[in-house]
Length: 176
Image (cartoon, rainbow, N blue to C red):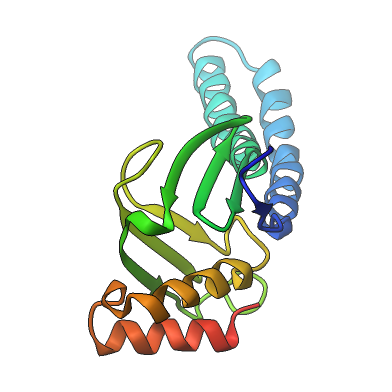
C-alpha cells in the first residue's frame, strides 16, 4: 500500500505449524465421521456431534487462525506504524503521537516460536487502542526498533522506568 512505508516481513512459521496440525487432525475427524455413518439412533447423534465438534476445534479453528495471520500486515514509515488487515488500514499511530513504548518478551517459545512484542500507546490516527507488533506476525522487529530508537533518543519519557529502558535496550541489541 502506498504511503504506509516498508512492510515488516511476515512470519510464516506459525502458518505452517497450524496447517500441518489441521491436516494431521483431519485424520481422526474423518475416522469419527466414518464411524458416525455406521451408527443409528441416539448413538448416531452423539457420533455426529463429536465429529462436528472435532472438525470445528481441530481443523476449522486452526485454518481460521491461519487466515488471520496471513491477512495482517504491519508497515513502518518515517512518521507512523500501520496495521493493515484485509487490505484496509485498521490501526495507525504516528510516532509524534506516541505516549508510551513497552517491550515484552519471554523465552518460552524458543527460536521457533519467539514471543517478543512491542506495545505502542498513544492517540491513534486510525482505529483505537494500543498497537501490538509481535514476532507472532512478523519475522523481524528490527526495522521498527531502529525507528523507535530515534524517537526514544528525542523523547526518553516514552520508556517509563529503568526496567522499560533495559527491556528496550535489550530488544534493540538482540532483536532479529
